[in-house]
Length: 139
Ligand SMILES: CC[C@H](C(=O)O)C(=O)SCCNC(=O)CCNC(=O)[C@H](O)C(C)(C)COP(=O)(O)OP(=O)(O)OC[C@H]1O[C@@H](n2cnc3c(N)ncnc32)[C@H](O)[C@@H]1OP(=O)(O)O
Ligand SMILES: [Co+2]
Image (cartoon, rainbow, N blue to C red; front, side):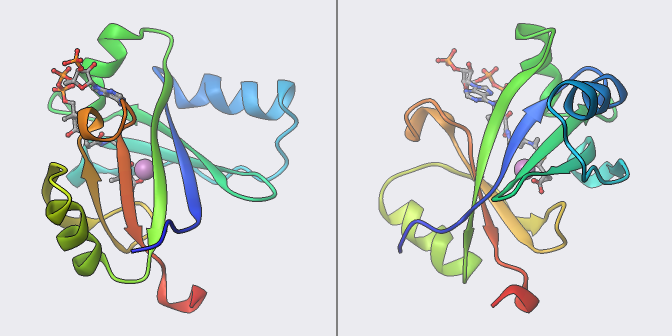
């Protein structure tokens, strides 16, 4: 497997609205999507476009959100994960498992509507790593 495009940097925040103001007014973002809920993944999401990737703002949604523990440790929010694209999510899952890295759960549909999975940060040099199948239209 070859390292694919950095699709997004996940940034956890206690308030997407406050983060939108920061990215718009301080960082000068000009393309900020509408926030939307992903109940199945326990997050509210908002994408901020940059010239070469996206910032994925994620706010906890529901009590079981996987971002709650992160925000308890980092109340102001912070860098949460990196997401790389792959052409085939199932081949990528087999690749990481073959390398002895802990794949967290089965592939499920992520914020871009394609299958994703996460690899445990302890097996990724401390970086929670998301792998996402490249949207078909992008091939
Ligand atoms: C999928 C929709 C959307 C998309 O792009 O499509 C998203 O990206 S949604 C993003 C939110 N969803 C997730 O994060 C799912 C994957 N995450 C998990 O399964 C957990 O958060 C997990 C397993 C990474 C951590 O679980 P938990 O927080 O309950 O365990 P601990 O607090 O004990 O942490 C264990 C260990 O990992 C370190 N840790 C936790 N979170 C992170 C992080 N974001 N980056 C780096 N390291 C992290 C934590 O400090 C502990 O380390 P230790 O050395 O044991 O103290
Ligand atoms: Co993500």
